[in-house]
Structure formats: C-alpha cells, structure tokens
Amino acid sequence: MRMQNQGYFKLIEFAKNYRPSNIIILRKRHFVGEVGQCRYCGGVEPEVKFSKVAHSLPELIGNKLLFSRDECNTCNEYFDKHLENHLANFLGISRTTARVDSKKGTPKFKSNSGERVEMIGNSLVILETQDSNLTALDEGTGLLTINTETKPYIPEQVYKCFVKMALSIMPEAELKGYKQCIEWIRLNKRPAKFNSSALKISRTFVPGHRPFPAIWIKLFKRTGDKKTYPHMICNIAFYNFIFNFIVPFGSKDKIVDWGNSKLLTFPFIEGMLPRQKGRSQTEDLDLTGKLAKRNQDKAYMQTTQKWTSPPLEEIPVEILNRIKELGLEFAPELPVND
Image (cartoon, rainbow, N blue to C red; front, top):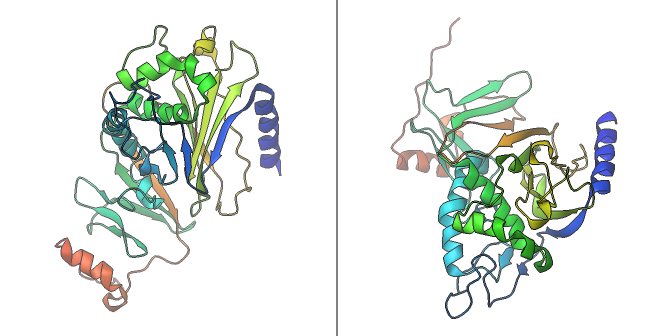
C-alpha cells in the first residue's frame, strides 16, 4: 500500500505541472499527418515522394499500427539508417527475451562467441556452450539472468530516435516551435543553445509477460514553472518497458535552466497492470555521447519450474532441426559424483 501511495503522490505532482497534449494507445490502425509536405525536411510533392510505409514509431519495438502520412521517403530512409539501428542495438537482447514482434518476427540474438537466444516455434531457446557464462540461475528465487554485451550504438542517436517518435505525434500548433529540434534529429544541425543536460531519459522495466500488450505514446505539455520544467515531455511504453524523456530545444524552453531542470516521469503505480510479475525497476540513463559504445547487457526471466536437462526425445523436433541446421551438438552428460 505504501508503494501505491507514493505513486499517487507522484501522480498529483505530475498533474500540477503537466497536462496531456496527445495520447495514442495502439489497439487499432492509426494514421497521423497528411500527405503533401514532409514534417521533418519540409519537402513537398513532387520534389519528394510519400510512397513508402512510414512507421511513426519504429517497427523494431513492435509497432504495426501507427503510421505517418507526412514522412517522405528520404526522411524515412534516413531515420531507419541513422537512428533506428542505434536504438535496436541499445535495446539489445531485451527485444528477444520480451519476444518483440518486429519486421521479421522476434529478433535472434548471437553473441561474439556464438551463443544464441532465439524463438524456435513457440519456445524461447538459449543455445550456449558447456562452459558458458551467458546465463545464471538463482535457485532460490528462480530468476534467470542472461549476461551479454550490446552491439555498438551512439547514445545521442538513440536519444534522437526517441525524440523523433514524440515529434511524429506532436500537434501542428506545437510543432512550429520545434524547428531547431527537428533540424537536430534530421540534419544533425546543433541547436543554438545546445545543452547536453537537456537529454534526460528514464527507463522502467516491468517484469511479466508483456505487461503492456498495447504500445502507448503520451505527449505532455508544461503547465508548471518555466525555469524548472521543459515545455514538452514524452512517455512511451511497449512490452516490458516505459521510457520517459524530454523533447528538447523548443522555442518555449529559452529560459529553462537545464542544469537544474526536472524530468517528471509519468507515474507508474505498482500492481496496476494485471500481467505484472514482481516489482518494477527504474533507472536514469546517460545518452549524451556522440561516440559508439558497447554496454554490458542483462535480461531477466522468471522461471516457474525446476531447471533440468530434458531427455533428447522430449525436445521438440523444430528445436532439434534448428540445432542441426546450425551445425551444433548437445554436450555429453556429465558424470554424477557420489
């Protein structure tokens, strides 16, 4: 009850300083914008084309329902190559363990040493060597930890990818004040008063099987103090994650003291999601670098049965076929010490 009360108090504080600008929960197909002029580069037909399917939120996070009519082919290709690839690498193995339904199904994971985590049939399968440190099981709690490393990503490009999602649903009346922000994400043009302290993001992990079955994106507009709170903040939830972040460099943020600014996160109240299993974990992330980096990457899964080695004849045939296809073999049974 105490944790829930804290959540309600945060909700009251949030409501005093922000109000909704746009909220979309993806339960059906939804289109934003109109064909004619690109929201990002300003290009108009026939100089630019709008023939490609433009996802407002990347398909790599499972979006198959929200599309932009006002994103031209050239900008679509740019975002895919220069922003979304970095987001995919940043999210790492979590896209596999959360079973994110992306463009080509659940993404497969392969470590530098050849270990794999992938969906085979309806099963999430971990293929590791006999002496592998890929997984660790806590026998007491049943918590399985997968330890690995992300592929290279540029932190600032990841942040830009989140900001692009927010801009894709921003009302036209507000969009006019974010010219420098749009030029930053699309043309890599540094805003006049660029401050890396503005790039604040918070990530919450909610355990359970798809506690957020429908992706949501929520854009909020400031009603509180103009020096403390940024004009626009965004909240995105998909599968097991909630991301809260600032939409920076708007014309109404000229007097914000970024060093002392406050990112109010949309409150998450424990126990309100039927599919949640266990306590959520929140962390603030640093996405200010412009150089590629790799991070230690962890994913957590709750096991419900004792960890055993099943007899070969009980392993589903599709898993056996996949192992054969990869040219792998099962490790021999180890002798039991009396």
